[in-house]
Amino acid sequence: MKTLLNLSRRNFLKTTAGLAFSAGIMDLDNLSMAAARRKWPVGCRDVYLKLAGNSDCWSAMKALGAEGIEVDVALNLACPNLFHPERKYSLATADGIQALKDDLAASGCKIAAFMMSNHLDERLEEELAWTRGLVKAAQQLDVNTIRIDVVPRKLDTEKFLPFAIDACKQMCAIAEGTPIRFGVENHGKFTNNPDVLDKLFDRVGSPKLGLTLDCANFYWWGHPLGNLYKLYEKFAPRVVHTHCKSIRYPDDKKNVQRDMGWEYGKYCCPIYEGDIDFEEVAMILRKANYTGDLCVEDESLGRFPEAERGEILKKEIATLKRLP
Image 1 (tube, rainbow, N blue to C red):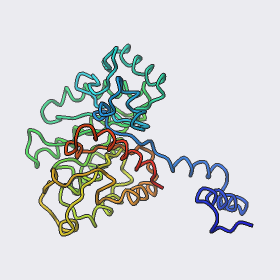
Image 2 (image 1 turned 120 degrees about the horizontal axis):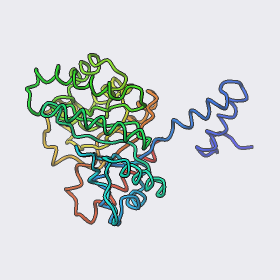
Image 3 (image 1 turned 90 degrees about the vertical axis):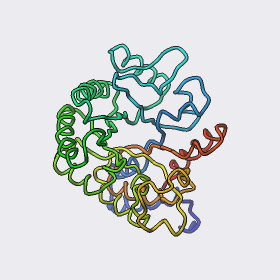
């Protein structure tokens, strides 16, 4: 008779689940739901797909092991980082949306999120028109998450916050009645400040506004390593999308408050070499019932020879797939 010590991890999970079911602790529906929550699509930003060396973005995804990608969408609704030898991709027309939909179906690939690089305080009316077009296209393509920038580019910080709150309210209104949610990234000086995020979420007051959790940006901002997981826990219920990257600081700099961006170019690194514990991140997200994706954004790749970058990215995606 096998003992629990001799069981593989997989068999142990099956056995204990069966015992729990027999005891009436859980039912099959709950087991199915729990299993579904264990797996998130793992992929990367579309800007990295060319590192695979394939002729089209869909075969590049497969070569890298990406199960989903974040697609950058320009102001004119073009998708500049998706590539194919026979066509360009755009969401500006019904035919363009259908062509992308057809290629996704044919390749078996998935878009996990769209990405907007917003300039809200420079061109708000254009931004809102862009949002309307992208929300419409996203519904047709079954993409429910749009990463956004809420960053002052023209206004000073004090004037930008009330402006940003109003702009985000207008964006959320556009998404009402749809499954679309926006994920403001903790990015740059402004939204890496937890107080700013609190005010933004509270005063916009819409479930349509969530967070694109960039795991390393809080660290870049200067937050000590030991404080990162508290921040992840604080904002985990808001997370709709992720950017997974890391930094490896010297031991005497990990758990102190650093200047914003201190030596980032020198110490940013692949996620499997960095200080951030992604098993801990995954545990926090699971506890918050996160249902999005894990998206690699490696800003250290430029430090490596070009011929090595694709393999590094592939290894990062594989690392995230192995998370328990």
